[in-house]
Image 1 (cartoon, rainbow, N blue to C red):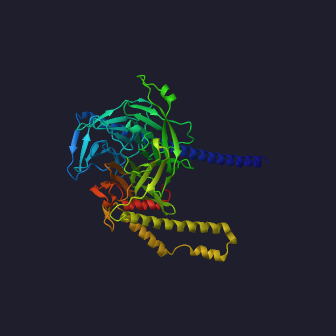
Image 2 (cartoon, one colour):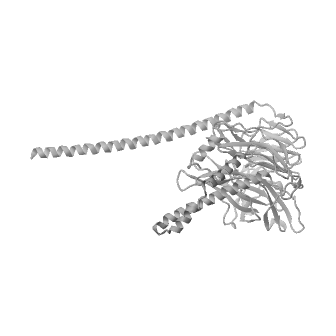
Length: 586
């Protein structure tokens, strides 16, 4: 009996040892997984640190180069030559001269080829010639910044705020919170870094600025800040900058206002010429956290607000600066407004610019705004989205009944370009056809998916006739192949490869694009640059077109061709195939 007791004890100890080994293995595996996660996190932190160090090193080198410059350097390009292609910069009309002003911008060439620009480029409309201007005191290279210009007795002023600088691989960002003033004095082009008083906006990019108060002040709205580690922070705050006193003041929310616009960047900000204390906020973009912690969701806004600046005597009396001045303080009253008429294909990537009294009416004062381009996502397959770029030309008519801008009304108005009032560009027709085919195919897929889901839910109660009907819905393989072939052919013929398209009426039309530079000078609309995509390849454009808004029947005039954009890395076809084969791509 003792022997049996000892053997039983031995078996029990063996089981305990086996359990201890299994427990030890599980703990070792858990520890290894934890160490692996720590190593991955450490590597990610080191990579971010390397990106940040590379960014700071690049900025220091730029600062050294800038200090080495002793005077303003002006280079007159030969006719037909143009500055390096870029987008997401500032593009405005000179307030007193027949010129266009471009500053900053970015260009991505694939892999680790992110280019940032800081020089000033001025286009002489009469001579059709560019000048590139470098200054010892100019702002650091940046994109996503905003500016506003006004006329002065000395020639004019341009005020610039914020923006961002990205590392060469785009992995680190530096957002700016500086305020610059460019004196448009003839032949001087002097930049001045201001040290404004008051409460300046925080560092950001993607914000918008517009003149108010008859050119006395500049209103800034929205934007975002990205630290590269979490979801970007978006803003819906509003600031005023006084062009005379260089004073920033935050515009608080009016007590009569229930809900301000949601935080956003890249909105359209338009002045109301009939009312110097009102602006219009249209659309915008933001990224928010999805249901899963590591998934972000894009939000494209289509709402519209009229912002009324209301002087606040109580705030003004309490606000004093170092010189005991009492700057005029405002509160903001936001009102949602509906735009009448058929709307655009998309507001994402659309850029617009205000006109001042281009139109007139005996019953109401009428002004407006024009815009071009845009981009939106379409469903190519059930899990594959593709960006569809637009060549839409848009006009918004801004009407204001009575004094003070009361009763503001907005209306989308059709734009008829070319000798034929109904003339549409070939590129617009092709785009509409592609969109219609994609939408038709998406509807069929949704119908088949709904039918399959209904059949599964019905289980054994599904009748034979309904099953036959469900099976008869899918298109024949040849029909689907033909649709895909047509869609592929249309994609291959994207205007990324063509610079001028003429329809049967002989109307030149700019190719599809987003984030274009738009400006109006002497009732002429200028469209410059922007970007489009083919697969995963980004194509930055540098061509420029003009359209006389008072004589739109004459059509578009092309001012300069597009420079070739050399892409580094995988070919567009390979990248496109990779992106379409991945069902998890965002």
